[in-house]
View (cartoon, helix red, strand yellow):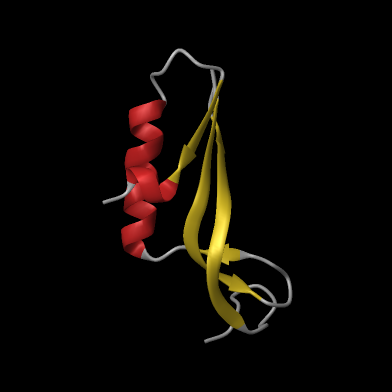
Length: 76
C-alpha cells in the first residue's frame, strides 16, 4: 500500500491527533495509525476513527479550554 498523497511507503505507528472546536482544543496522544515514511501523513483505520469520534464527543462538553487524552486509556 502507498500513501494517497505522495505515493511513499507506509508503516504502522502512533500519532497525536488534535481537534480544534469552537470552545476548546482536544489533544489525543498515542493514536494508532499508518504513517507515510516520506511525507509523514497519518491514516486511521475505521475502528480508530470511530473511537476518535467518541473521544472527541465525550470531551467536547467539558469545561476545559484544552484537554489532553491518552488514546490507550480511552479506547477499549
